Image 1 (cartoon, rainbow, N blue to C red):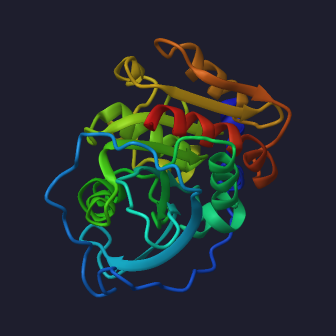
Image 2 (image 1 turned 30 degrees about the vertical axis):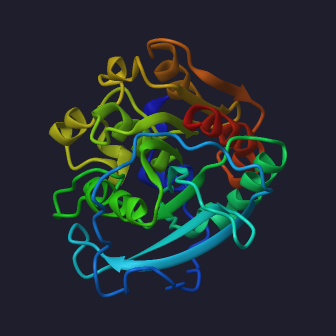
Length: 297
């Protein structure tokens, strides 16, 4: 792949510009009010509960909060989770956090990818139950930026603890994402800032093996790239179950292939026909959901 061809315009196209950004309506039952940051739980529970025998139905919720790491910006979130019939005792499910691409928002998870439908099919087929959640990250590439925003810290210090306060098991966390979000998921898993990460999956991750200013908004300069170089961080994923998928018609396929080739241990996923778009991501999402469910069980 000719990396010089990745102009700023093409980067925006690759990273998912145009993904749905319409907000879901806020649901506030049992949720912190929008003007307050998410509460911090006492801590994760390490014991895995026995899966319930009753049929589980997926329920979706949404809300928002103001993050200390995105001053003055309301961060909206979406959640899809198994729910027992009335009278059932809810177990503490693991949770997988989704990171969206450039130009996207939390709505990509449920509107563009219909991940709640994929999760329901996974449960109906007897797959291990877990929840999936997404939060707005702007166009920050999920790492600290020179303008003072730090959406990775928002995930680690605010959003994930909030999910813990809602009853999800922070000892069993999955990370997954598309394009910019695939990069962000791999970066966060590599840096080890979340102790409970059990698996990471990236669909068409926007990864590069060297700094190029034509990569646009991804990095603030050579030093910023070096501090968040996922190629250099690959050895840290040795013990983490990982899955990486990419379409063969994707302009990022060559660098994704090079990144995969240098990862230690087994890497699930692979390459199949498709581009850098929702159609391809929807086609591989069921396998990603199955991978996460198996490793979070």
